[in-house]
Length: 395
Ligand SMILES: [Zn+2]
Picture 1 (cartoon, rainbow, N blue to C red):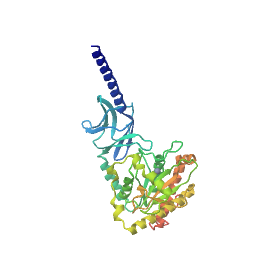
Picture 2: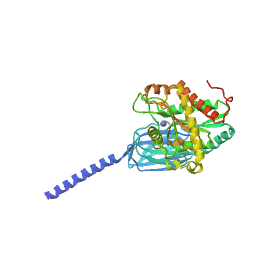
Picture 3: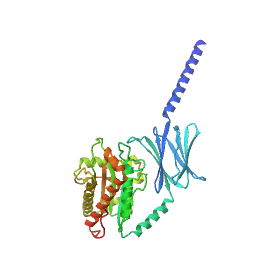
Picture 4: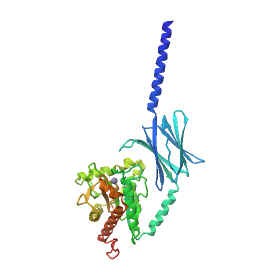
């Protein structure tokens, strides 16, 4: 009899221990939502959840009232307050636990939207992430409206101004916290305003606010606008604080002798897609670059990009230090529109505290914009697209 009870006691102990073990492992298994961010783009809203680990989730829409439901298995959530007031799609975010094993996050939305969602693995100091894109149907009307604006300006020279990074992808970060994506957007907006204040030229932005645009979409937007020129604006960073100076890049031909510095920079800039979060349908391959352009046209376009880049260096030299005397080449995705003369400009090193301070300064941002405007103008003049009496110097 005593043996029996002893056996029972052992069994009970075993049961208690295994239960505890399972409870502990379930707790260890549970993912935690640690933060949430909202990025508002003209045609969609992106909601990003930072996760402690990868999750198993289900997402669906419910109507009347319109809402998006995300059910996440075995998860918890930190108390998060999310300001959604200025977003045209998301009204509010709520969460609860309809079952013990399910965390339910509900996005109340102002209009019917299409959904796209995907998980991102940790990279560049970012944790596991769940990205939910709410694609606006009303954005189609917005697109048609901008096409009408384009048609009115058919006789203008069109410049696509590309503000590097945005949204989830901050780009380089200065010692005092200045983000590359902020500098690039401010300079880009100033450049667009300057161009649009002059007759005969019209500028468009590939990114208008703080949201992420995939690299190939930037190229596509420049093409849709039928741009005659594209300038992609960036700011560089390295570990050594003292490094400074502007640099300019163009697209390298396939098979060209690689320039070590330019290749490293291109790899860094091309990583924007992975950091910002790109899904497959964003990255549609554009057949134009690969097939349609003949060798002659490619050569012409690369030569004009080189001329544009040289003009940019001349103007950048007037307002500060230059890192390299001549433009460098590498395979930057954002310079993929071979039929459009395109350059990528690193305004300076945001990692240099003195340059960071300058880049933050609105007057210095004006100088950058003026330099890029003058370079474009001189380029079009040399290409015979502008007559020298058409423009008085802007300064
Ligand atoms: Zn950059």
